[in-house]
Image (cartoon, each protein chain N blue to C red):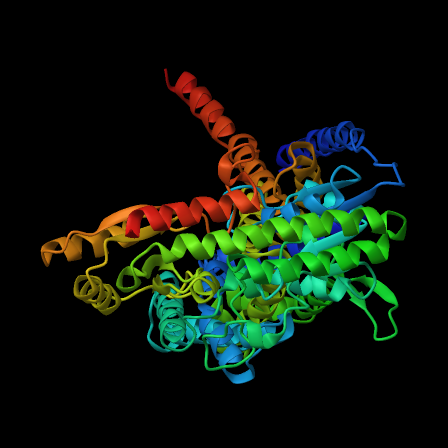
Length: 295
Length: 314
């Protein structure tokens, strides 16, 4: 049963992250997940300073608010300042992280307070982190419900706004012409990204989220040229990564998040070498054939 | 296009069965521990494991999740650790946020499973709170042997409750262990008194020794706060250099879990001011030494630390 809960949580996280990540890599914003993982620090410190508590819920609220602010600022600098997306991400998360460090040094140096300690969960704890009602009834692992609801929200968001998201990602000018607000849909997308990442940090930890946000969509990108198949392959890869990563971790008694991220990287390497579209080997064969033709 | 599609199918068709086969080969080697009459006790830190082992002796299985040299703040559970926690009949942890988020999970789990924080029966007045927030206690309680005795008593009470058949045996072992700790407490006190009063100042990399300082009458100053995220500023270094030079402190101490280079800058600073301060040695702070070495058990760890401190400051 433990294996089932862990793989289920992993799959939920990888599906919501992978779907959103597909849009992010096309918008050259893949590193936004890493940015959010750092930028939530001041949110955690302020939540602690206000409440004097370090429990998960308080930290989640603080981190959630800062996550939204981070993505909002990234999008804002990009749109209003005409700044490149990578520069916008870099500027936003470094100063927010620095702000968090200064807040800790000034107000909370004597308290053990950082994301790793109070916010980031660990996917290995999923089966023991139970949701227990006041009467002592065990409903099930907390993370399964959190990541499951996030996945439903993300899927409905993409299903409802598929056309708008598609157009604003690929051809913002055309979208504007036919009356779709590019700015609005970009902010909505970024809002969904911050919700999904912060909730997933709390359930499974940062490394896994950052990896799942980028590796499966990047792999799918190498395997297909169309957007809809890319989303479908991303989802399948996410599930595959959760299953095989878990059993890899079991066989070596290692970190589950680490094993899942490793599998994600391996799958990317396989696609990079053997992709029928732009894989290294296919390209090489094609070049050889061309050389033969010319000689 | 057709070629490309079939190639894609081939790619997935090779991959999926391969992974499934791999899983099946792995799921066979899950062992199940079916011995029921022995208690299976899991602790977080080695220091708690030491208490439990001394009380139950060989009558139960005891495992610590965090081995020698593991910083509890940075500990990450493996798949095996999860199995250990799931199969445990009793779990002991330190509490006071030493285990971070895992502590939260334990607190929740304690409603349906015997999971006990050893710091639970120590009254708040005996705990150190250096913040202005209230309720944010320093978790490093094991450095005051008398507090650690309270933790041991609590562990023993819990064990007797859950295993009443062996209660008498536990009682007897606990008494012996507490007596050893009494001796240790007195020993540390006399040893520390050997240091001249004006030299009784201990400079460390981060604040883990507040309880030690309070119990054994030595001033403690750390370069960093408790959180390793609160990076020290240049002013912290300068202040500490002035402090050391002014009080003519002979030695500063490195901890096994904090990089040595932090304190090196302080030592260099003092040298420039004409005061020669040495690095007095490495102290065990959040984890014990390797099993088999002197510092591989709780009492040995405390003795090693005290020897290091006394030899450097005497």
